[in-house]
Image: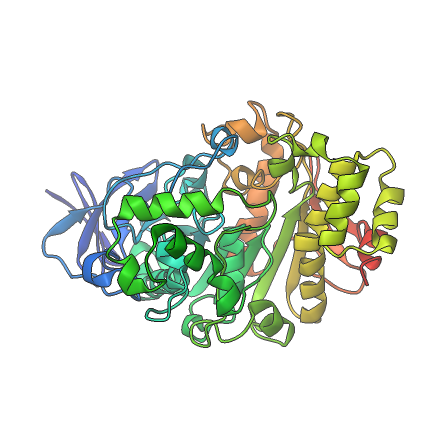
Length: 489
């Protein structure tokens, strides 16, 4: 039975709230003033005739489709030990894994939109983690969208007979859905901010330079992931290794004949032996000359997306997520440190600068900091320099978790950004009593950036301002650890 309230394509009924999308009507629910829609398909199920193919349109439906529960997740294996007890990664069976969720202020119109792209090394993750719940963004006036995309070999395999970067193409299809439908949920399609962490951040770097994504986003937040891609030959290494393990040709036609479970098992067998930082035998984006014409970092340095405001950041001790739980931080000695630095091509001058700045650091801690700076802090600083005098802001998340010597490790900031501290999937990283005042500040900065284009501190300039998010009070610092960064040049 209708209540008589209709607004911007929204109809409230006695059993929920119904929105008309271009593919059909969907029914969500309203909780404490937030309209929630879960598991809405934005592209056809990527299996059968659509397997290893670019995302295809959804077949429109008649009647009202329930959007009351999270949709299926992309095929993936669980995180291996010990990561499995630190990082939540639920799996929901089903073929319609190209789906998204929407949280919106009930009855709103023309609100800023934020689209979350999850991380997970391009082979794990989904949009259904409790830490990614968007109700607090909606509470603060933002329409929040979180998406699933194809992972692993299904999303980032490189084949001679199929398009590359299928997972990235899925993300573009989801952004196209946002452009075409989000006004019906109360969002402004002309004010869309992308934000993502780790592999999600790397994906956003690519989206900023892809001709297929032009006009689909207006601001971007890159959390703990520097833009990167490889030539097809290098990006296809994992595809070839999996083909060798399966004893089939390295073609999409051959892979499509392999049982999904067997294919996933072969993927796991070749990806779990990689190094703790970096993908190892994992998956990367490919410079395919189509959806990704150039290395995105090079394109951004050359002025791509110069008109888009960008918030860049990293965690102060990213490496601890991999080095500490595995025991690697304690196994590295002076000899293995020298070998690792040689492999990373770190010059003696740079190593001396880090040792001088951290005289109490163990060899494992020293390697971790250098790896963090090489892969994240330095490239993000250089990108900010290249964008001058554009709208660019930098942050550092520095609050150290009390759990298992994790410190300010990779992924720790997510619960603060979403203001979802205390969710079950966040507790292993943050512990039971993380500082809520820090979440208030960080979440507000993200909301303000999406709403006004200004997160609340000085944009990047020649004094190198960085907002350091730490408890009890975030603080603007200038040129932090600059002696170490200068030692690389």
